Each structure stands twice: as C-alpha cells, then as structure tokens.
Length: 129
Image (cartoon, rainbow, N blue to C red; front, side, top):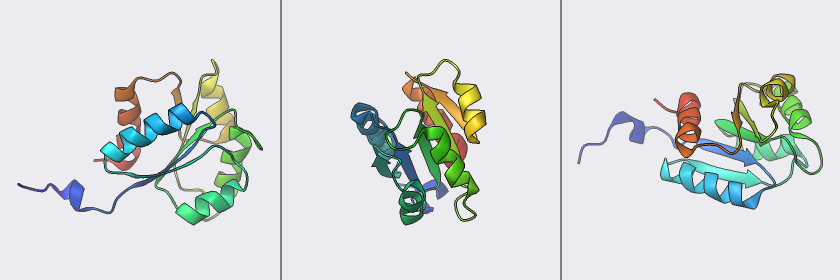
C-alpha cells in the first residue's frame, strides 16, 4: 500500500460548538472518517479557554448557543492574539447566515441543514489538500 503525503502530516484538529447533539455526533463521525481529531462543546462558556486548551486548526460555530451567542463567541476568539488566525466557519439555520457570519468575523459559513458533501468540501478547503 502506498501512503500519500496527506496521511503523513499531523492530524488536523477541529472544534465544533453546537448545542444540537445530533449535529455534533454526525459532524464528529464525518470528521473522524476524514482522519481529524474532533472536540465538541454544547456551550460557549469560557470559549477562549476551551479553544486554547485544544488549539484546533478549524472551528465550526453555531449561532444559537447557551451562555453567549455564536457571534460573541467568534468575536472573542478573533480578538484573542493567540486564536485570531484559526478559521471559524459559522453554521446556522438562520436565513441571514452570511450577514451573521460577517458580523461575527467568521471566515466562512455553512447553512443548515447542510449537504454532507458540501460539509466535507468546506472542511477540506480549510484543512485539506
């Protein structure tokens, strides 16, 4: 069997903030199948500390979360010198998700419900190749 260079690189880490456990389970399964290490949180409580403790390569942020909103949480991450360069993908069922993502300072957005292939494409856009 021939290994390609992608499998020789360090495992990519992805953090998902969402209070919907079904979404967390589905996304975790997909990302683990892609060879990623996944951490999830149903809350944005101490969001900076949560992210600092894991130091992911990519973050998915829901809009509606307990404690502080996805917008506030993303703004806190982007205001932190250590975390500001981690791409954040805003994902929500809101019809104005592109506006919310821009307000939050996220790099990209993904509307829910999402197609699994599109989810994988977004992930690979930021961590793949």
